[in-house]
Each structure stands twice: as structure tokens, then as C-alpha cells.
Image 1: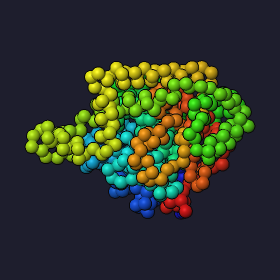
Image 2: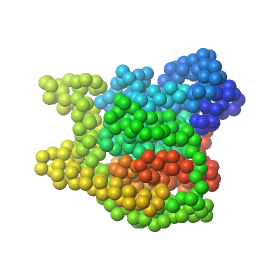
Image 3: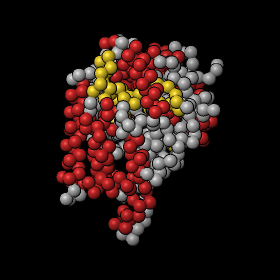
Image 4: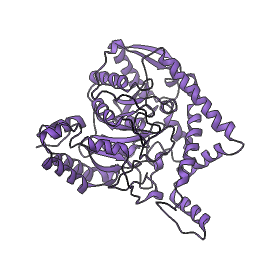
Length: 488
């Protein structure tokens, strides 16, 4: 048998029919990780023995009928390292959680394993999901499989790189301001941020609780839909979990001629790399030729989105990160007294970007500044949501570039945090509004991937996935880095 190179749904179908064993699928994934991860550094932890043991159990103990009821039978899955697991450490990319093991699994992990998926490892990320490049991890940078000298995007860069380098067909990431869609675009894979509350956050280490959402990264729209169908369930353990119907297991490609698609002028102005703009406009022409009605619209408060996001997210982070004090779990650095121990633990345990955002957030919440900054940002957030409500009264979906530029070189933006923050300019609005957003690869420019972003009204994931599936059908099949994970 040759190299196994199927997407997640195809893999499950082959395992269910007995054409390949679960052990063979996991062994293939582990071989890819072994050969590729030393260069890409997508994985922080790999549990090869545990994954193979689960695969052997599936092969030897489950009948074909039992496997037929497992929608992801034998599929190797990677989990971003801010979702807790009992059988592997969970560090959130931070030294302050080095070696931490959770006594329970995140709900999404439980749901995937119940569906037959086998978790092979935990992926690298910007520390506590704070970053756009996966350069802010305490455990080294992740490299883009298309060009190892460039970033994979962040903060779910490890998950996106693992899928792009064909180490696994499916991975989970989390998205606070674009952290699934940005690396999906930079790595040339599919990624979706669901409606806030669609997927349980129980077991997700919080960055900004009112913005965080878990979602899948994959190599096809069908894999996104299958995974979201399985993990988008109501969870009583999560107070923000929505009790709504699950999305269909398979997207039905919509008739593009029935769609009215909005093109917000604020996302097609200055600042977009001309090469990205050219490819996006070519893709828009293909949508027009297929009968879609593309309509100019305006989202006027977009100009305030980055400022709004970088007040709300750090404010929530400064509260969430107060629990890491060296007392209950994780790193503890000895001090002369309790306060000194707190200070030394947080000083040595947190990286520079996390400290920067804690300071920003604490300042925004401090007496005398709360009304001027945090409260005002929440009011603007409401205006951003109203912009989308008004737009979706006119159109079915909105399309934009996912990112304004191509993957930048490692270290290129280290000395300019504001330039790094602007990387998220096209993605933060969906988190502020709580709506779904999907990044779809639409081609390469100078050998680097470009993504197009779909946005829909709240709980319209089926509509978004169906439109992306229709576009997927008319675009040339996506290219992927060569075997071994590195593009020549």
C-alpha cells in the first residue's frame, strides 16, 4: 500500500470498509510527524504509543458495523495545546504551565474520541493564544510548511501547519480574533470559526472569554462540516453553550446564482498586498461568472475594530490570567514570602507578549480608565454587531480577503507589536460580533497561499459551508506542500 493521503472523511470511510486499518492510518501520521516536525515544530507533544493502542483496540475489538457508527473512525487528529487532555500535558505554549496535566478532557476532545478520532498530539501556539504568528511560544517558533523562513500565522499556527504539512488530516484550533482563519490562510488550508456558543469551551484555557471559540482546520470543506457537526453540540458544563440544532453532517453545495454576496468597501481599500488583491478579485470574478450577485456594502465601524479588540481582549485576559500564581498548578518559583513568590513565578513564567497584554488590560480596567476605555470599547462592539445585522438584511453572506498580506518572514514584526496586531484587521470583527467566519484557500502567489474569508449571520454555518463547498467545486484543487511537509 502506498502513502495514505486522504482527508478525514475519506480516511474514516476506508477504515469503516476495512480497506485500511486504523493502525496503518495512525502509523502513517506518526511517520509524517517524525520526519517533518523537527523542521516545522507543529507539535509540542506526541503520544504515539497511546494513539497506536487506541487504533489497535479499534481494529481488534470493533466490528465493521460498530466502525460504521464512528464518523471519524481511525482519523488522526491534532489538538491545539490550550485544550486540556488527561493523557498529554497541556501548556498553552507557556512556561508557566510546563508539564501540567489535566484531570479531565475538554468537551471537544471527548466528542471527537467518541466519534472514533484518535488524538496523536498537541500543537504549538502563541502563548495563551496571544499572537498572530506562533512566534510567541515558550517552546520555539512554528514554521510555515510552504516556506520554513516564514510564519504559519497564529495563534493556531501549529494546528494549521500540521494539516498543511499532511501530518494529520484534521486539527482543532481556537479563534479569539482570527487565530483559526489567519493560519488557515497563511498555510493554505480550510478553517472555520463558528458562531460564539456553537462549540463548547469547556476545557479550553481562556484568553478572552467573550471572544474565544474552538473550530476545526482541515483540507476540505467536507471535513470542516463533518467535524463541526460532531463538536457543535450543547454542553451543560459550559454556561455560554447554545442549545441549538446541529449543522448537517455534509454540506450541500449551494447554487451560487441564488446567493447575494456583500463586498464591504472597508475590506478592499488601501493596505492590501497587490498580489493578494489580484488573486481575490480573480476569485470574485469566478463567483460572478457562476451567477452569484456581488453587492457593494459598507461596515462603517470596521475602522475601530482593532482598537476595540485590543481593549476588550487584553482586559479579559488580565482577569483570566490572574489564576496563574504558582500556588495551585504549573510553575512555582520560590520567593521570600507569598507576594514575592507570586511576582517571581509570573515574571519567569509569562513571556513578553503575555505581559504586554496583561498590562494593557489591567490599565483599561483600572479606576479612572474603565469608562474611558473598556466601557467605550463595549459600546463600539455593539455598533460593529449592528453593522453586520444591517448588512445581512441586504445580503446572504459577506466575502473578504482573510488577510491583507502574504505570510511574513520569521522575526520580521518582532519589534513592532502594532504592526503584528494589524495582521488581524480583517478577522477580529467576526469575533466581536459573534458570527461565523471561514477561510478558504483560493490559490498561490509566489508559492505562498492566499485565503478568502466567508462571513455569515449568527448560526448560519451551514450556509457558509455550502457556499464554500460550491466555490471549492469550481476552483482548481488546492496544492499542498510536498511529502515530508516542506515545499521545494
